[in-house]
Structures are given as structure tokens and as C-alpha cells.
Image (cartoon, rainbow, N blue to C red):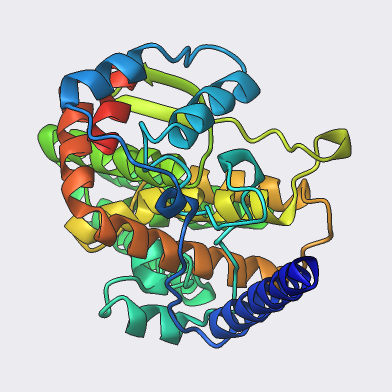
Length: 355
């Protein structure tokens, strides 16, 4: 009788877990926030001092391979010593260990309008640089061509009027060749002219603001990467900027190095986190071009084909999720920014997040 009752209880628990997962999936697709119990609730959390957390973080070999680094951090979570590592993706499964958790990162379609609305108008296509507002259009080429022609004409007329006869005529011929050369370059390599137009539009930061922006960008990457459970591939001070930069392992665990859906989801969040972090302080991102290129590469390495429409959804969803993660951990994020400014080492940065 007891075995029968136990069996029925197990069946009910399994049915409840399945219903909960289905509810979470449908809620995510509908764009609703879902709060789910994590494995950390079933593991007694140790109350460690900052120095004890620092000591544990220092014991991790961040120069090793991805699997050993992940295993070390997973063990600290399973022992109750750490709680933040993988906290964005941990969901209780039949076995409550960090390495066997189902991911909480369940992408859903996000439009630019809903992205703007759910981030209080901060994250837009224009602020991210993905809405096309900053692209060079045909009208820009047209306006520049007219300006070149009119400028050359005016310069030629001024040469004839103000310079000695022979000299003026020579300069007039030279100025007449400028529009011809401009149109020639535009026909063969329009990208060069587009770069000039975009360069003229860009606003430049002073040195301190530029370094601050980079630190905020990289701290956003680091925080979201840690929350998503991505092992660090490199962490070093950039010689050109003098700021700390972080890079994560992006090698897929699927056959042939392909990336699974969960890995694509995590990388989408981390790729957009740097730009989102910039926007929170400066209203517009300037350092996200390389992140978007790397994200495109991740999409190409996915186990399953990812079409253009889904890529856009993942990019916008990644930005929305990164926004929620940073806003939800703003205190840790600001301390992490200070750590990046002070060029603290990797274990110190981890200790800041876990403290």
C-alpha cells in the first residue's frame, strides 16, 4: 500500500513539474516575466565573509580549460559556498546539481516596440545601433555629391577670378577633376565614402569618458556572462585603452563544436550586455559592432539553422534579458565597474559578484 501511495505521489510530482515547465514556456512566449525556484533554494547556503569568498575564488584556475573552470565553479555552488554563478539559468531538475540544471533562458519573440516599452524607452534600435537609423542612405550620397560638385565649381570660378590667368586656369582644371574622381570612387568603392560619412557623424568622447565607457561595457559582459555560466577564456588589460577586457569560451559542446539552443541563448544575452550597459549610462552604445559580428558567427555555428527573422528575435531578446540582469544586479554591477577601473584581477571580480 505504501509503495502504491509513493508511486502516485511521484506521478503527481512529475505531472506538476511538466505542467510548470509548460506554463513557463507559454508565459515566456507571451512576454510575461516568470519567477522560478532555483536549485540554490534546495542547497543550504553558507554564510561566508568577503575574505572567505575571495579565498575560494582565488583557488580557481581561470587560465585552465573551460570544462575544469566550469566544474570548479559548479562544485562551489553545489556546496552552498557560491550562489550567483549560473543563477540566470539554473532551474531545478530531477537531480539538483549545477551541471544538470535546465536553463531558465527561454527566448521568445521581441519586437523593437516591445523592447523599448519594457525597458522604459532606454533600449531602442537607435540606441543599440541595430535599427538602421545610423546607416548611410542614398540621400546621403546624393547630398555629398551635390556638395562636392558645387564646392568644386565655386573653387574653380574663384581661381579664374582671383589668380593670375595661367595659374587660375590650371587650378580650374584641377577643381573640375574632383567631381569626376569622387564619382569614380563612389562607383568602384562606395564603402569608402560611406565610412567617411559615418566618421563625420560620430561624436567623440574625451579620454576619461572613453575609458569609463569601455569599463562599463566590459563589466556588463562579465556580469551577464557569469550569471549565464560562461567560463572565461581571457581577462587582460588592453594596451591601447588601459582598461580590462574579458572574453568567454564560445566552443559548443555539440558534435563538431556546434552550439546548442541553450548556448545560443546565453551567448545572445552576453553579446548584447555590453551595449546595454553603455546605454544605461550614456543613452547610446558605441562599442557593440564587434559583439554583433561575433553573435552572427555564433548563429552560424548553431546546431540548428537560425533564419534571419529568428536571429533578429534572439538579438532583441538578448538585449531585453541583459537589461533585466544588469538592472536586477545594479549594486554588484557598479562595484564591478570600479574593479575594472582599478584593474583588479579575475578572482577579485568573481568575489565582488559572489559577496
